[in-house]
Length: 146
Image (tube, rainbow, N blue to C red):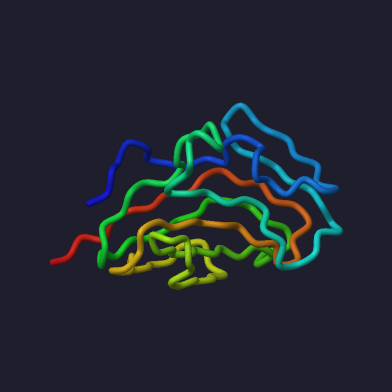
């Protein structure tokens, strides 16, 4: 079961965005353009969380709740130059915040299974040699079992 209150997940606020030397511009359609030709590969540009401490962050979780042992498709919509200059990392954590599993993908669409022991998860964008990025949104959709 997935909570489908939001069809698309956008960039959101600049909090948590890699800002050192990065030119960030927001568009009315909620897309974000980043330009930083000197950014080192492996840097985390943005992370979305499925669980946050409201009193510390004063924000709500950006990601939907997922059901354990269920398959989901993550689909990202962005333009990157040069192509393949961006990786997606999904991290599954237990109730104590320890990492259970990490999955890093080069493609914009991929399928993952939410682990049985997982309590929360995070999705991050990693730089892999990009110079400019226009990020529109992403979605997480449940894959129905037959």
